Length: 513
Image (tube, rainbow, N blue to C red; front, side, top):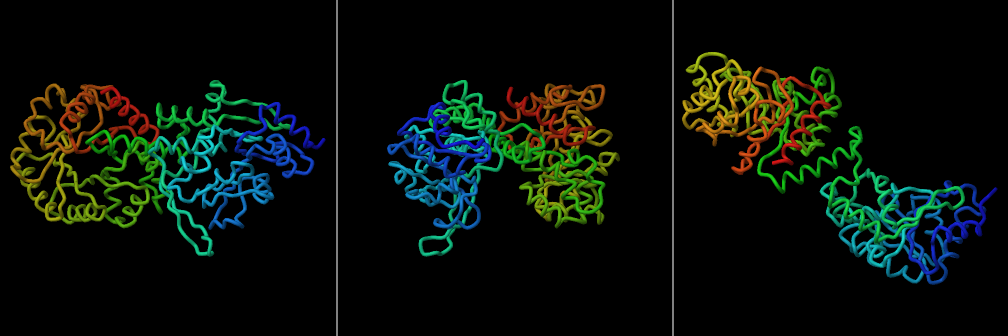
C-alpha cells in the first residue's frame, strides 16, 4: 500500500522533527517505499511539519560545468524536485550547492562562492552548525553526511586537497573556482554512527519502511572534530585494499614526518614489489600494489635496489613517469663499482631519475683495490652531482665497524658516505648501538640508517625484534637532527603484506621514543 502524506507527517513528528526547525535533509525516495505522489508528497510532508517558521534545506550537488539555473541535482529525486520548487533559493557553488526554502533561506545560501572552501563557517554547512540546526536522513546513512566534511575541514585534515571546479558566471562565461581543503573520495562516516547515538545527539526511527535519523548539527559536528583530533584517521577505513583510504592515511603520516621529523623516510622498493619485477610488458600495473603500500606509509622516497635499477637503466623515462604519477622520488639506486659502461649506465639512470645517491656494491677484494675503485667511482659520480654510498655488507671490505671505518678514512675527502645496516653489524657479532655507533669516529659520514634488524646468529627480524638495537639508533640519530634517510628494509622477506608489517613495527618504535 502506498505511503500517504499524512503518514509521512506522523512518522516525521514521531521522529522528533518540530515546527520552526532549520533542517538539512538527505534522502532516498526508493527507501521510503511506494509514496503517493512521489517526491512532491515527501516535500509537502516536510514543509507541513516545519510550518511557515521552519526552513528546509537540501543538497543540490551537480556534475560538469555548474550552471546555477539549469544544473540538476545529482543526489536524489527528492532533491531535484525541491530544486524546482516554487520559492526555493539555491546557493551559487560549483561543487556543493544547496537549496533552501523558509525564513532563513536567503541568509543560509548567501555568498557561498566567496568562501575559499566548500564547507567552511561562511557556507550553508557552517551556518547550519552555527544556528544549531538539524540534519535529517530519510533512508540513507552517515555515508551521505556531507556536514561531516566540514569537521574534517575545521581540523585541517592533512589528506584534504586543493581542487578546481568550473562554473558559468552571470554573463554565461566559464570561470574556475579553486577550493582549498577539499574532501576526498571515500570516508568511513558510518563508523561514527554509534558515537552520535551514544551521545544523545541522534534519534532513529522509521518513515514508511525507511530507517531515518534526526541529528543535532552542532552535536555531530563537535563529536567528529573531537574524534579527528584524537585520531586524524578517525573517518578513514582500515581496509588495506581501499586505495582511497590507504593513500589518505599515508598523507597523515607524511604530514607528521614533515612537521615533526628531520629525517626522510624511504623504502627499498625491490622488496615491496615482490614478484612483479620479472613480469614482461607494462610494469606500472605490476608495481601498482607496491607503490600503493609505500604511499600508505607516508613515504615519498624509494630506494631502487639491483632489480629495479637494472630495469631503470633501459626504461628510465617510463620509470621516471611512473614515480612522478605516484608522487614518489628516488632517493638512491644501486650499482657495481667500476669504470666500465655498466657503471656509466647506472649513473645515467640515476641522473634521469633525479637521484643524487648511488649505492655501490663493494667487491670482496682487498682493501687497496677497493679504495682505488671507490675513489674513481666517486670522481665519476661527482661530475654528475651524485654522491657514492657504501653499505656494511657481509664479506666485503666494510663488513665490520673497524674495516668500514678504515675504508672510509682512507678515502680522505672523497664524497663517499655510509648506509648503516644494523642487521649486518649484528650478524658480524657486534652491538650496532652500544659498540659500533658509540665508538664510531665517522658519524657525520652516515647518510642512511636501514630500519632492518637481525639476530647475532644470522637472519632478519622485524625492527626492534633482533639484536640490531634499531630503536636506540633511531633515537640517537633523531637527537642529532639527522637529516638523512631512515630506509625500511626487510632483508629476506618480500611483498606488500610483509612490508606493511615491517612498517607498522617502525611506527610503533617511533611512537615509543
